[in-house]
Image (cartoon, rainbow, N blue to C red; front, side):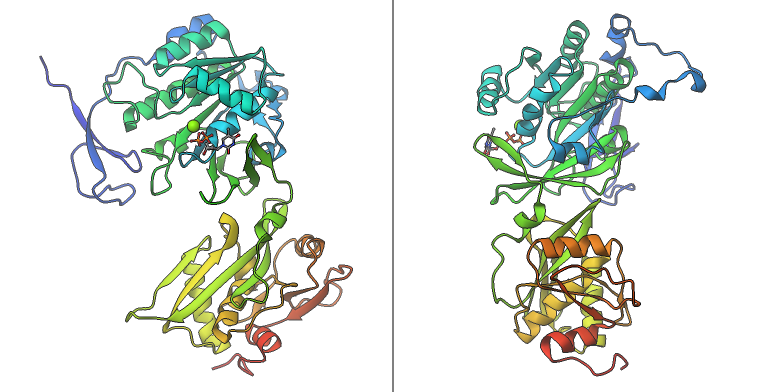
Length: 464
Ligand code: TYD
Ligand code: MG
């Protein structure tokens, strides 16, 4: 018998190489190349049921396509709909990734009750038994005649049920447990995950079924095995959260039908996930009073202004090279701000360990949080607390200048709404300052001026 051909895959990004190598040439990861039998060139399970479902594979004229029918389904959860770009698009494939136990199955089962209003829903689970799902559904108060459960891991059988049932929605929990018989590899391996996703994509695109797929995330935060998955699907949503807190953040990493900078915030309760429509309140809850090293800022998450608390700690270092850690904040931006603070603000922190943390599991990647970050660092350095009703918004440049940010009036209104009394912003030309009732607006043109105002310290001039 001829030896089956072996191929090599990177288990981190899914890149295929003809031979083993120590480092993946695509993603640069070390020791991630694994050997697997090559996928046979036979047709996967996908097309077996085409005739029954009336799918065609003929070219169509662009003009004849009707875009009016881009149908969106509302899931009944505004937070999820917003992250999806205004509801789930009919015939799309949405991948929901997240660490085990974060609430992916709960989220998808919970939206079933609403999805059932639009048509049949088939919930395929390779992880739990029908009884377990029923118990969970009872807890979530989900009960509908249009909801079908199928505990199955064979893709062929799943397709058969799709062909028989003709559901409007298909939920697969999880992609790592299903397998395609035409592949020799074990479930969860790169080629299986790839092949099953391809089959589900086929189901979504050709039969117009809206598919939600759950994918587990590995230790490094990537969806297990495969970056390949991200390329194939229409939307990638990550469900994140601190395991010790009940708050969960849903974030879009890719969306072919909407923006990717929206977030949805949920709280896990006894009877399922509850939407949090005012995330600022949640992110600021439990904020310490009169503690040094913390400052509140306002960042835009999509179209929503959200208040975030930036915490910083500087401490004497016991190493020759001081440690720098950023959590929820871009590392290089953090390092740059520390250098600006040292050089332009005269705060000597280069020999100290420094840590920056954004509270509540939020990750901030916009420059509007710069000023709060340097003020938190300086506050810790001087051991002087910033008033608890003070917020700071602005980008810090390399010369220590403060630069404007977008959507200032929206941000200031949010700051006011949460009871803050004063807010520091970059100096604007007269007439441009949005007036917000009851909020003192402090206009500052440079970092050293901000340090002098708040701590009475810092350089007279920004020049060295
Ligand atoms: P689950 O959705 O099973 O996580 P995943 O599918 O992402 O692995 O969620 C499991 C956790 O959620 C579990 O620790 C219990 C908790 N939970 C609640 O707190 N309330 C609930 O109503 C449900 C269904 C789960
Ligand atoms: Mg689960």
